[in-house]
Length: 271
Image (tube, rainbow, N blue to C red; front, top):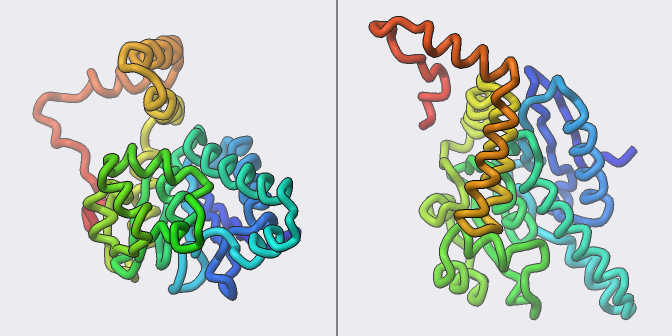
């Protein structure tokens, strides 16, 4: 069994750790395949309500695609192998984006190239104040290949995305927050606690409602607003006959007017 990605399940949260520290957790065929396999297991596991992805060590979340492995294929002229690497990488980010359970990136260090593209694709991201981001593919004579040319403009806007893509310059976590690439920046030592608290907060709600929202947002981004509204209506209609909705409405309407609002708990320490 490959150990390029480690999985630990605790309190309903699956922690996936990219585990190639000697390569700054760079993405190769083996790691991508392992991550895809674990996502399949997590989707089928009703005991898991959320996923956190991080990297081994303090230096890197992921330095991106494994350039050495990629360059060997190019040097050999193995065009099908190169295309397959791109296909797998795009398949991974598409899988993360459409995953039916919330996926949170806990960005603990460098997130370059494909590592940055994973951060773009997941539903939510919390970054350490030591994290750095970059789209350095231009310096290697190629465009991003795991979806960066499509997702980054949708997150940051066309002109800001193009500047990052065309210069390859790195940027700090606060800049990533400003661009909409991450949701929160926290002290490095509080990163995993913050990511887990965010996951627990979401897991306190109906899993069906969470899935419906993820589906509506993900599909809607590739549609007109009118088409997206139809998806939203479909998702709501699917919720109507469920116990989740009935229980939530009963609990909500049963509250007394003078009840205090729900506490945010430990999560409020960070955000």
